[in-house]
Image (cartoon, rainbow over all chains, first blue to last red; front, side):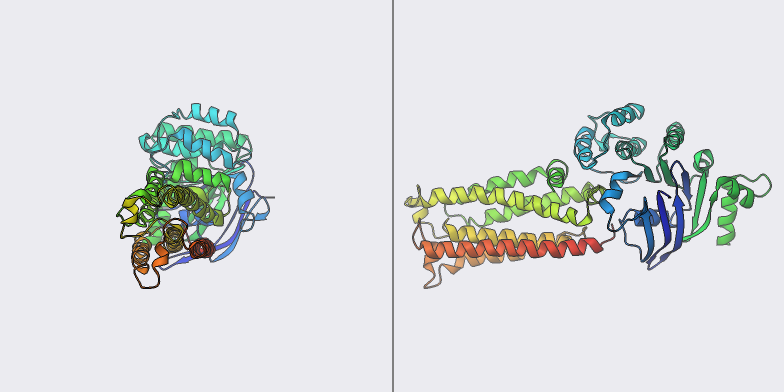
Length: 239
Length: 217
């Protein structure tokens, strides 16, 4: 049984339509969700988390439909976005002390481990953190309740190359522990480094949903890099 | 719900919400339109909504393992918590004025509203209107709060004006009774105030939960 299964997800805005997205994630699988800005990555992720209402389609986790099992599903998944900054003037220690009470599987040992790994200071406030450290704080909250699946919206945005590398190594470690990771990005090297599968979205339509090997075999022409292939495909569409 | 209320108190609330509870003591001020104090406690709550919006509180809460409708319940619970603290304080001041200070000259010569059970009923009406007009109005978008707050200000000051003028109308002077005079009337109007506060709060909460459920964050 897949950890997450999306079927025919649809959402229409006046100037944008997400069209019949279907994909699934299995335990220990890392999926890179790539597309240019405005392609529909965040709309898809927000629909998966119930933050926006899709016009149609199904979102299931652990075999359960999201709507109707929202609370128990959120206990088992983690979400992080690089862009949003929660309670910028509150100490991390206070944010954590409130957040942990909501999660039955909160693991203080894991929390301490990631706190040390990310070199975060509990007495700082989010407003005192760099963009990269804010991403790490969001990840820390997501990882400390032993989430079986992580949904990360552009987690590498704003990170320096070293922090990005550390984060991608962390994904590999999570994979070994059986955690599934879906992360959106527009940086192709992130996907090349750690993703097993690729979801490529363009203008609200999923144009590729396959393993990295298959994508490279079918889409990259004669030694072309992933980035060059995607740029060529995007330019071909825009031309 | 307790966890969410704790989250409201520790993370989302503005310190001004607690500070303005102290304005319940304004019922001691002679020659002052004491109902205005209940507007100030609502102003403190408004500040908490502003602080929470700036801190992305609703998105954070929606991602916790709670149902979306509980986000609305928690906001109402927090508002009611502050309002009940305020009502308890101003109620205590009112009881002191009705008993120990009922014959004090500064209050006997006061041409404005007297602190009695009718005053408390008007306080409850203003707090109920805040919950219905402002909190309910905010959850129509979960983002815009200026328009609902302006609407509340108009309604609140209309109630203050009503409270300050009604007892000047011939035959209604008993509304401004001192101490325990006209106790039946005072208790009846307080009961009406409790009903209005409860009704406005519960009905607007249900409407807000339906509205918030439909909103895309």
